[in-house]
Amino acid sequence: MRLMVTGGAGFIGSNLVKELVKYGHAISVFDNLSTGKKENLVGGVNFYLGDIRDKEYLNYSISQEKPEIIFHLAAQISVSQSVIDPVTDGEINIFGTLNLLKSAVKHEVQKIVFASSAAVYGRPQYLPIDENHIKRPLSGYGITKNTAEQYISIYQNFGVDYTILRLANVYGAGQFAGNEGGVIAIFYDKLINGQVPVIYGNGEQTRDFIYVKDVVSAFMASINRGKAETLNISTGCACSVNQLFAFLKEILGKNIEAKYEDERPGDIRSSVLYNKQAVKVLNWKPLYSLRSGLTDTIDILTK
Ligand SMILES: NC(=O)c1ccc[n+]([C@@H]2O[C@H](COP(=O)([O-])OP(=O)(O)OC[C@H]3O[C@@H](n4cnc5c(N)ncnc54)[C@H](O)[C@@H]3O)[C@@H](O)[C@H]2O)c1
Image (cartoon, rainbow, N blue to C red; front, side, top):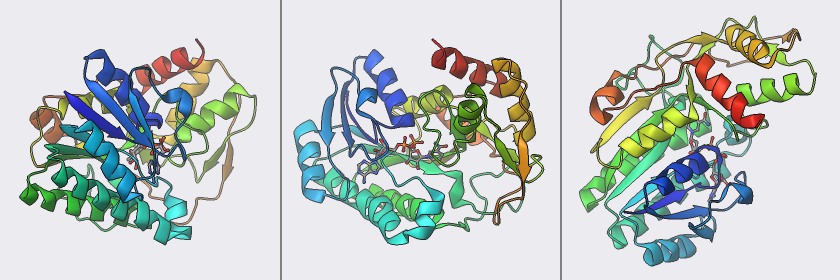
């Protein structure tokens, strides 16, 4: 098949591209390399260095490639940046997505698979959070992902099918330690350099950490399944930050204690996503526990 990945030079996107290539698909990547890296690009893939806000060039790339499916991962991904500069966040995550949708209609793209986020839900009213949970985002990022989701869903009326994947906290090799949500990458970097990581609050806050290979398999499953579906992609398991830190120390054989600092205002105490709808619809399931995913990540990083 002819497939395009926006954000294909980024952490999740490049892992997806590497997997798609194995199946012999014709792949193109559209990325402005703002957080993505050139070295993440895979040989044999057509690369368009461009910004999704640039509608002419985006349209040109789609007209050249004529992809059947576009995996849309390019985004402004920083929650704090979305608060500091909500206009740019909106321009990339909303208007960039609209540019993509308009070109998708023009060039008869059959489907968009969209990387959305658990940030659309906001503060959990109950756990685990299912797809029917109220959406009350707490940040510009959550609002723009939510808005992009809504635009994507109405473009079905213009012949573009979709699967929206609401990702929990993704981790794995290649995640930039400076990125938010990349707590695992940050801890790893600190531990490997013999530095003391900071844990905010008492460390008993929980998150649903999903391994990037399990996220990639959900994107792959969306090629043939998930028509007009919005699905949580998660492990369904809550893990505390203390537990995560203990796993990492054990796997790396490091005996460094974390420094505890005040909880950050607005931090959510617990988050875990219900994934049974994705399991059913995509015939998919996460294969990695946090321990096995971390072990695999560290194996890759230390090769
Ligand atoms: N990592 C997570 O835990 C997580 C969780 C939920 C959702 N997501 C979503 O998954 C997607 C991929 O995230 P990631 O963690 O791989 O981040 P990433 O920063 O590594 O990847 C984003 C990619 O998009 C590119 N990009 C950014 N703005 C662009 C623009 N204006 N035009 C073209 N390309 C642009 C970047 O260069 C980068 O390659 C994003 O949409 C993100 O919101 C990620």
